[in-house]
Image (cartoon, rainbow over all chains, first blue to last red; front, side, top):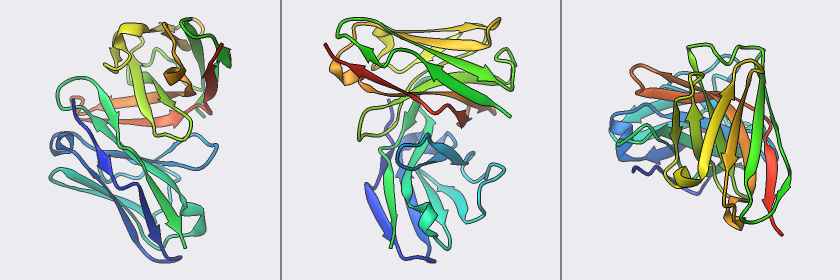
Length: 108
Length: 124
């Protein structure tokens, strides 16, 4: 099975840019999706297919993929962007799906 | 507007079976475009995919729970369900149901709509 590795926490100054990364072999073959989760709430899809933004998601959020690493970038971070962010992709060996461990983004 | 709502017991005893149901409104569960999934989150921890089901009954399960899990779908009620047996404290978690999009020869997948989740505590 595959694993997706994320940094546990990152911080960003208000209005600045932050990148959250997700590393795993499966990302060489399968697309990544990203989810935002605030305390006590269900996750929300913010990026799918590496770099596609669902309707209603702010243009501050963008995604990219290079080799075995997918990235979520928040440009001009707002206080409301403070949350846990999880990546997800398909496992390389089967019809299984894996989440990264999550990254807490703190807006200072 | 798609809406998913989980229902089930909040407290289950160890060694017993957990049964959760997800009621879908705003879209037919038999739509050939979509799959349906369960995802759980232990207290203070990250998300874990539990399994995915298609309206035909085809299923894919996380190997970590596969020997203990069964998912089913009831198209007449627009619901899908999760049964997890031989429960231990490690199964205590918030359980979310979600719509699972799988496209492009299954190279692209994502969970585009989630229920609010159901808290499940395994304790005697």
